[in-house]
Amino acid sequence: MSAYSNLLATPGVGRIITAQLVARFPFGMISLAFLLHVEQVTGSYGQAGLVLAATSLGQAVAGPLTSRWMGIWGIRPVLILTTIICTAAGTTIALVEADVLFYIPIAIICGLSTPPVQPAVRTIYPKMVNSKQLTPLFSLDASAQEIIWVLGPVITTFVSTQVGTQWGILLAMVLMVAGGVWFIVLPEVGRVRIPRSRRKLGVVLKRPPVLLATVVGFLLIGGTAAIEAGVVANFGHDGIEAGLVLAIFSIGSLAGGLSMGHLPIGPWALARRMFIVFVGTAAALAVMNFWGLALMLFIAGIGIAPALAVLFAIVSSSVKFSDTAEAYGWVGTGQLIGSALGSAAAGFLIDHNGPHGAFIAAAIFLAVGFLVPLFGKRWHPDLRGREVGPLPDTEPITLPSAG
Picture 1 (cartoon, helix red, strand yellow):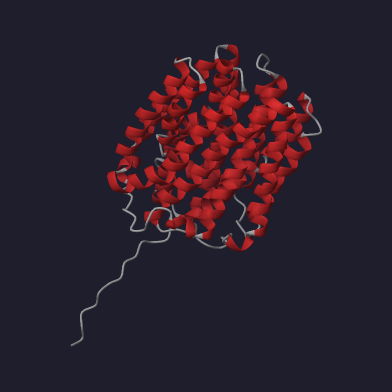
Picture 2 (picture 1 turned 120 degrees about the horizontal axis):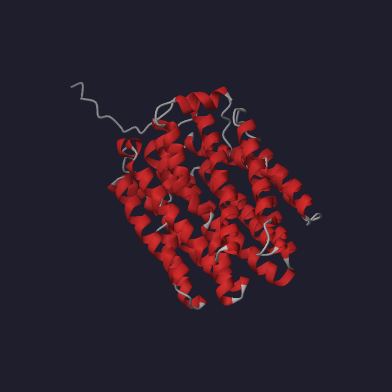
């Protein structure tokens, strides 16, 4: 744990981790909040799934695009613009009761304007710490991210079921504004200038580690989103059991992230961590009662934050600094699409097969999420004994002629 205490003693690290956590917290709430609210309004998980798919479509386009904009216009202007638009769109869905045809275009706008906080902070981190501290920092950040992806739905479920589904969305919007403002005004955000990338949009995906991280992140978060929807459907909207089970899921992930964050990252690291998540989720299918789900999801959670830390590290060590924002934009897009499509797939299967359907969807996502790094081992860089950090941007130098 000394590595983490040394990190937090580094000037600015503690506050930027906390601020970006609050700014990104709504990302772990919006998918489930939309699912619960639209289902409440329309009476159909299937129609709610269409709204989530529309959100994911917007996010798919926005992730790498807004990340590249930060290299053109700067981090702060892009974050301010996207935060304003996304908040307005989400608030509209919460306050206007309409049919699914109204919600879909608004959801697309909400997805298109998702603030690129994740690629921004991932790009800033290497400028704040040395290369030896970067892997523990990614691990600490990944553990914090699990608060977003797992504890966020707990809060959303509680507020939506106990107060009202529209309030689950509105709470996410309040946090988006408050966290966004806090993050934007930090001096570390103003000091970092992302160089303009000279490559075409999407070229960074030709780097195998970036593609691997994007695909596995999509599958991992898709699986966890399906689990969250399944837990809510299993225990219903009115009790606290769903929130407690998801909290235990969160505790497992936090424990895994903090206990495994110091381990060297070898070529099998990602497959091993994904296997833990898959086994726990698959076992949950056999025990749909409170204590059985709590235990199996605790086991599954142990692999989540460590897997995310590996994703961040292999991306950071595989691209130039000018390409890091876009690379993390693709990884973030994969995760956000996974969250939306995982919830959507679970919603459709819940309509036809009950809560078991959601866990079947989750198990499929996570099985593929284990097989991809297993068979894609050659794409996984071996970071044992290597510095973790972006490659330097270099340009050809014209030498004067000897004649």
